[in-house]
Length: 115
Length: 117
Image 1 (tube, rainbow over the protein chains, first blue to last red):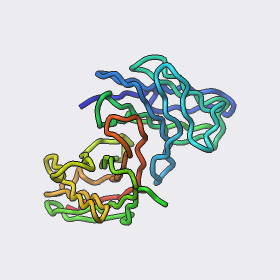
Image 2: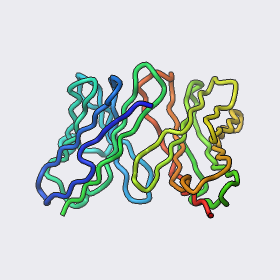
Image 3: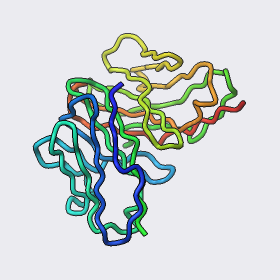
């Protein structure tokens, strides 16, 4: 099946710093990528939908200025958590769709811990 | 209203036995797709099986099968011959609209399956 990679897999940072997470579709082109956030023992919550070459669509309650998303190419989307705070600590998962197609593939996730 | 409902927070099954994980959904869109994902402790979301709303037959993928009852709006996952490696969280998800559209997946709250040796 299609592979989606995420980097880094784990990051620890100090409060106030910014963290960039990369999501790549390795063997297919993805015009649409999704960014999710998952708290312990909870389900995945969609943060934003990233479309190549255009601005991301953010879900209600997600601060676009805090969670910057850039979908620069058909194989790369980045999520930057700006001025991270401890409450931003979470598991961030990206997902990509192969177009055309039904399947949606997920990256391995990034565990962010803000001290 | 919840679009995806998984009523079983946790399930136990004996190794080599079959288990059914429940999922009901709510949509008014005649075109939709239903997905099941497995999330082991590592966190990776692993795609298991897909069922389209217009598919005539229940989807099957190896030991996984989807019991699709459209009138009841249910899409239960059946895992046959359970293995210890099946222990994980299982999420049911739905996408509304055309299968090739860019709509998002709505996830249920998940079911934690534990396979007992």
